[in-house]
Amino acid sequence: MPEKSTNEFGIYLRDRRTRLDPASFGFVGGRRRTPGLRREEVAARANISPTWYTWLEQGRGGAPSADVLDRIAKGLMLTAPEREHLYMLGLGRPPEVSYQPVDGVSPRLQRVLDAMRFSPAIIKTAMWDVVGWNRAAAALLTDYSKLPREGRNILRLMFSSSRIRAKQEDWESVARFVVGAFRADVARAGASGSAEATALIEDLRRTSPEFEALWQDNNVVAHGEGVKRIHHPEAGSLELEFSSFAVEGRPELGMIVYNPASPADAERLRALIGNATA
Image (cartoon, rainbow, N blue to C red; front, side):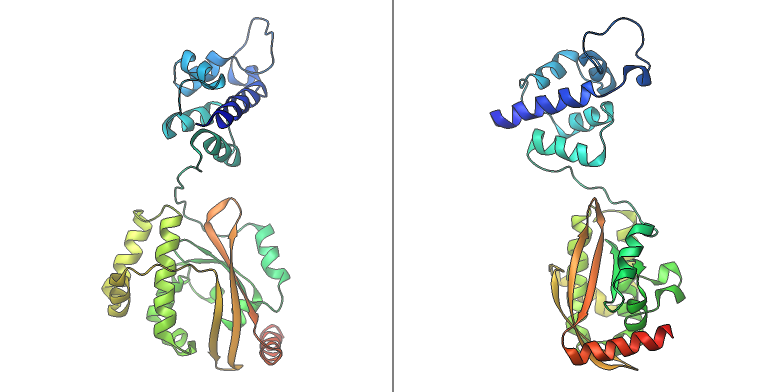
């Protein structure tokens, strides 16, 4: 670690240590000259030597390993953001992400979706399962509430639903983009080797020769922003601009928001949403 990072790392460790209540960890008896846990108590909780922990607080001992940082983070009861900050100070990078399956979104996040009345928006996982959507998305894209949970996967819909396929102006280009963005999302979320990803990919490869061919291409693309053209059976042809957003603190989730590309598209979209909610 550079000298500045070393000093900041030690200061951060001391600050977190002195904020802890010894009694809540079962450390009782004896008068304490300073607040918080003692260094040897943190070392014991982290299963490292007291000498080395002392050196870390003093800016000595070299850069700790990721395993040691994880043990210290548990010993100090750090939150996820605090653990990430510990990694940035100790190793100059965030911790590796570990994929966690998601069943739904929080009420607060759902309210964010619902506030966008005329902008279709969805929340998807790294597996591209749709776990949140608003009424505009249900009217324009798919009414996910009418699908079973296992049927709300964008890739499964893309490669198995003739209705979804018919909505795409250039299905082959869209499918290639979706597969490349999915590959990038799975890797970014640390889910490449997970049982969930393996099962999904193998099932798609077995049931869809088109997915198999695209998967073998090994293309990777960023799902940042772009234009989507949809042929809706009621609203006709619509052109929408889309933007993708990360959900802070949830690397396994991403939000996609669609906005009409022209006043005419906006008018048709509003009419479609109005008819669907009437």
